[in-house]
Amino acid sequence: MRIWCSALGVAGAAVAASIMLASAGASPDSWSAPATLATCGAARQPKVVFPFKAPDELVGSGAIVWLGACGAGPGTGATIGIADLGGDDRPQAPRALLAGAAARTRLLAPLYALGTATGEIVTVAGSAGASVLGSPEAVAADGVASADVERLRPLGGPDTPLATMDGFIGDADVATIAGSADGGYEIVVRAQRHYAKALHGRRILPVGSARPSALALGMDFRADRLVVWAQRGQIWAQDITNDGRIRARQLLGPSGYAPQIAAVLSDDNRAFVIWTDEPPPGAGGATQILLAHSAVGPTFHGARTLASFTEPAGVRLTPGAIGAERLSDEGVALLWPAMVAGNYVVEAAGVTQTGVRPPSVLAEAGQDVRLAAVATGPDNELVVVLALAPRTASGFDQLHQELLATRSDVVRASTGLGFGPLDVIAPSGANIDPSVAIDPGSDTALAAWQTSAAGVPQIEYALGSGSGSGSGSASG
Image 1 (tube, rainbow, N blue to C red):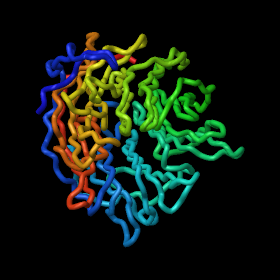
Image 2: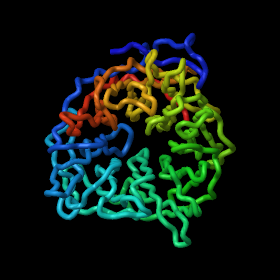
Image 3: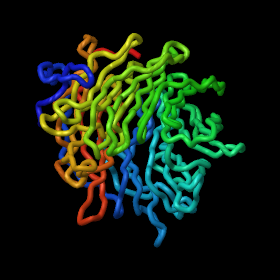
Image 4: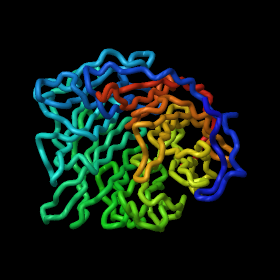
């Protein structure tokens, strides 16, 4: 267990004098040793999912899903494997999620997974047998964890960029890009409402002649949704009401190389959109993390800088570098990268109607700490998975990557989010693509990640038992 962690600080500023331990009053987890998941052979891109109909109410069984060989016929390639989670949140025997014709479709990464209020798990991946706009077509499969899925639903758009969002009461949305009749592009949003058992309906947002390069979704309690995208160096947003009305698009601010976006929409019709603005690898200039915080509407009036720093010439932020999370008390927490003393750190803060609270800093002295996965729990908390890997001239050495985890305790005071110790859940090795989720019923966290044995990709997992001591809130 490493006793380093949360701090007060200002994004991008030197904080050496202000770093303090935050384990007192925070919510430490006791993590199990990593275990290897039985997966019927090679397995990639695990996703942990717990279907729910309220932040503290599990519906059906949770599961770990992955791209692998479970149930695949000879020469078929990757399909979707699944391990249902028992009452102790430990994975059961692996099996194929897909059956029949669905199992004969060779699937490709990336893999997405969402839970619904009816206990279903919605998975989305790329199809190797179909192409849209020059990329593998995204296909969806949905069914309860304990049953087989025999039908894949083509989504009519490429598998990337693609955005998914779980709603507060078990709604699920998927957004894809499609070609429009006039030769341009449009964003297509499909919804599975909390009372439904399948993705249905299509809300279409025409976006013009340039293909969007990044997508994000935010959803409030009522299933109003905010669609955010990057296009021609700008970030745009457009909201759709739960009865299908589409409001005017809004320009939020500039974006740079490979933008990453995260968004939250609150029930008071305020929104928070956080994104990255980086120069391309090898180019000079500052990397900025920007936040657009709307008034009621949501109506945006520009953006503010959360962090500004200069990255090494060939090194850029890795996927999942930012987060915007809705907490169980309906508050909002943001996570973003910064640099302290030449090393990457992760900052995390609650936000209010008037601004961002002082951030906590997740750091390891002399090492680069990067956000890898985050999940919210029923006790108004976050579990954060961090990646540590040696820096190279062109990125990070993922063959020697360590994974750490910590749980927050959202406090009322202006000191912001407090976190427990950083626990090692995966020692240095070929540990990539972590996923984490929290059981709404037991408050147990489950993390899973891809590793390898003798060159064959496999999945490991670890369980973190929550303290159930959450207290306070961060308002959105």
